[in-house]
Amino acid sequence: MKEFIRAAAIRAVRTIAQTAIAVIGTSAVLEQVNWWAVLSASVLAGILSILTSVVTDLPEAPKKGGGSHE
Image (cartoon, rainbow, N blue to C red; front, side, top):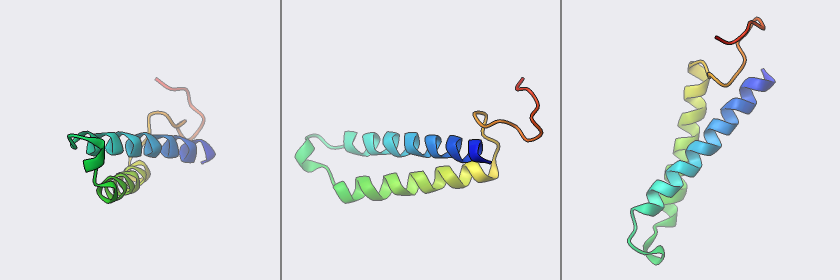
């Protein structure tokens, strides 16, 4: 379970960073960045990433039963 939580957290952090970069990239200059939009979109993406990790198998997380990865 610890490995799954770690893998899901890493995936969520990557998703948050990617979303923030994408939202920031839509502005022509840094002064025009809507920081509330960056924050809200990034947090929502992180939550969705964690929920997706819970309902699907993470390839990075070890499988239950201790079997080898194929």
